[in-house]
Figure: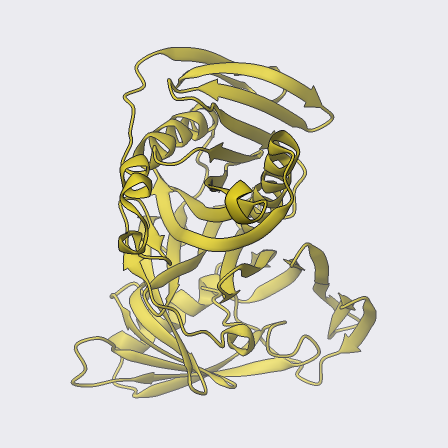
Length: 411
């Protein structure tokens, strides 16, 4: 379990309402009737097209009239007709910054494309809707942007819908620049992503997916994949993505990927990690034993980092954290302490983690203190968190288990 809280950037005052497919940041009731009518439009897409990408071992039928428009080194661009005036546009990428960062980039690029098509200058943009969801066991992110072009009587407005999902070998992003068709767009996107899931090979013995929310707004997810190698060691891949509205028309985004090797007893062998924030590589680190000491190398904000940890003992992995939580819940102890390496707290030192049992609280049975971060969570007998709250000072974020397969036990 590796969950981090970037609370310093969450100075928000959001008013949200639940929409058909997502959480709307701007209530539909504020708009004129013609806009409400247009936003309520849907279509039933019955026709299918075979989507084939030999390089990714993809050959599967998808909803809509999908046509390959352009392809290059590591990308494919499709136009998918759904029976409305404007087709859905879908991108397949094998090199990308992340689910959140790349979605934002494609949405921004598409809004600029609307400028060129309409021959009008962009005058304003607003965050219209956000959401996190699942396609099978694959999380997706949604970002809808309202925009206006031109000024005065010449002004035109639209809503650009965007969705992204990362499958085993690639990232899929689709956008649709037309009012309404929200359910239709989501259905077509799920079908498109399903073509890539059909060729996925699930080797994980344990995989939990968590949703992170702030003030009722889904802002991100964390996905953990646990596999074993021929020596019995455990590889843990953690992917996390977040999009945080910082005001009415801008979004802060971050993507982090870490790979940790763990022994079956829950101790770390080594780890690597990188983070992309607002389209820039923010940090990258490696953790390994060198000369019998923990050594960290990498960079943060472009500045090189090389350090030997003062702590020179057992570091717990994500796999070990499940074991530790489960063992505490089964024991007569009230608390336990372990040490973890967390680049979010301080990449050059080990972080002491304190787990404490909570009694008589229907929403939590364990409190986890991680430096300035406090987590109050409800964990099951296997140590898997079902729901909880992460707090740092006055800022709090909710987490919820969206999906889990397998168990955190060495197979």
